[in-house]
Length: 334
Picture (cartoon, rainbow, N blue to C red):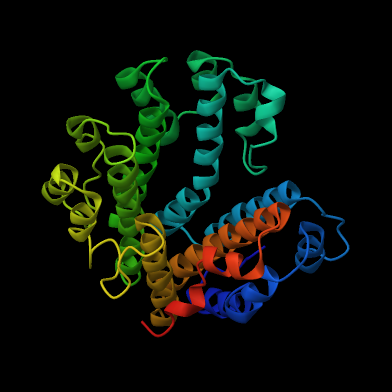
């Protein structure tokens, strides 16, 4: 556990830890392995992890614990921000519960999809309806977001809107916590939080508007203040006649112009997120930006390795997997 209270020592430790991350050639090397078992042996030698689901759970547990460990070395608004980054894993558990309740799946079936870390797993897996789900959640912004989602969309409402409303609540709280961080380091954390909110906006446009054909007014209500994409621009995106025109309005804001929305708008957004994370990590000598950047890079690492594990399970080729991951080292020069 990090026991230090000063950012000098924290920065030195995080630099050392980043050197062991699955980035660059090391990440691409994992894409060339034969099976999830070989990936598990490479990542967690001697532990006996062989299944993709086991790899995912262990990566999520490690990510949760490491972010909370960093938080414990900080204090005040900085610790509150890091704690909320860790709460992202609890949000994912809530979304699994929403899907389970909507589909009427068994608790046993749903439990296989819950992340290991944190206090919510067992209670959520047993929830059979919205009332039991709310009863399983402790007070706080996530419970309030679920309450608000059910109040607006109802227990039998669209799963798309229920999930989106809870996600919006999480991201709004993330931006609120970023806004009150002390300087230096605040701008780096705010940029990462705003980028995540704008990836959410891209998803609302590409999936909600142009895939599901949902109403503009309903999607506009999910806009998150404080993101780079303003409410007015978001409305213009929703009103655009075709996806290309809508996404063109986000170029240079939610994804980099030189990339365009290659591979899909959300992936383009995550590539920008990776660049912002690398910039925060490199550009923050001994301030909080290095912790925010490191946490973002660790999140990308976990997501990439989960992608690799699932790809190996499904028999994807090395070249396919290299195209699916977001290699955070590619943004080092930006």
